[in-house]
Length: 183
Image (spheres, rainbow, N blue to C red):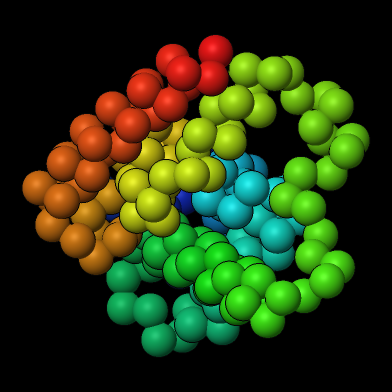
């Protein structure tokens, strides 16, 4: 019996039955319910979908491996969010290290195909977001893409709620200024 995708990862009365599922069914249900959204968030943080898909796949693999030690299966979605954010940070660090080493054949963040398909405004917004500091990008992606509350964002990023609010405010002001200049 596969649980309803809406109940996966949410606390409440469904959790005991949900937590009794075999690990494979549990991760499968979570994947079906949350993978697309997590890939989109990782794409916003990384700038390319293939890397985002890899990060999300790794997050689900880590969840599957950690399920026996997970005390509260109701927190699995939060675990996945934190894993995706941390995985995205790792990819970005690796990219920076590669730039420092002056790798000659660094692949472009945007492929020609995706750039041709994206509209000018879409590219301008993504370019402006990519120029924001890492934490600001993370806060804005979690707030406006996943519609998470400030407290949930703070928990996912390991910062205070006030830091989330001020970071989002400064980030939006910067985006508004940059986009006004570009468009």
